[in-house]
Length: 125
Image 1 (cartoon, rainbow, N blue to C red):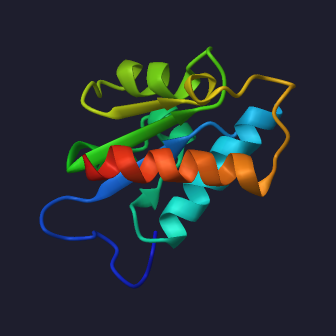
Image 2 (cartoon, rainbow, N blue to C red; image 1 turned 90 degrees about the horizontal axis):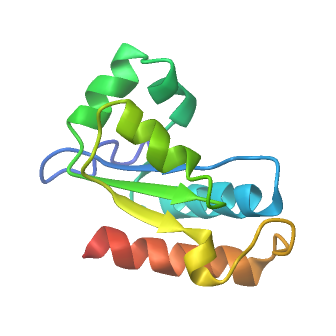
């Protein structure tokens, strides 16, 4: 989490979960989430912690004012993992909706920036 403002306060934290899968779209989702964190939009959290039901990660996620789930491919592992963890109130960004497909979307500045821009829009709205 960002040391400057760990909770981005006015209430609970803003949390970003991202696919970090092996495909190109997983790398794009991961890099976009890291940039959104660096730019202060929210804090990237560990999706594996939701799957493992790590108490601290679960409690922080429960207290979140806003959650963004970024999925690289239509398998929607992040969305499904959050739902299985009991979370249903979140923004969902699917890279396919931005025209990106598995094994056909290079990890470029242009693609990462496209996801970052959409993520900012979703976290603001």
